[in-house]
Length: 99
Image (tube, rainbow, N blue to C red; front, top):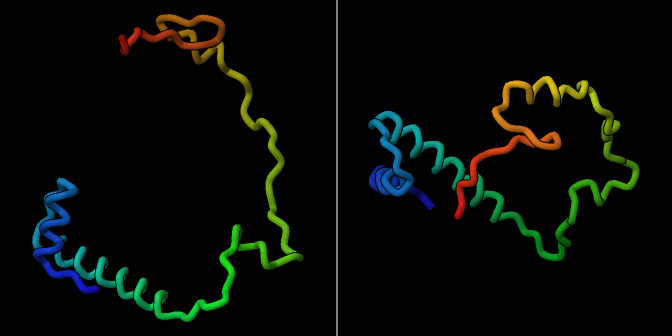
């Protein structure tokens, strides 16, 4: 699939973007490069290859390195809410916007 400058103009119009001539040409090159990569990936024969739920599912000896879930910042709720016009039970109160 190859796009043309009028295609880029139509896409930009649909996205409500204003592109200059040089921006349109750069976008044309980037999108055509992307579509070329997709065509290259589609050309690979994946017959008989099972989809993976997670990329590391095929590697048994690799475990995900997760950081410990620890609070790293002090609780400054009260100090942060001092400037709020209305607070109740630790929550900011805002005007009702939906009737």
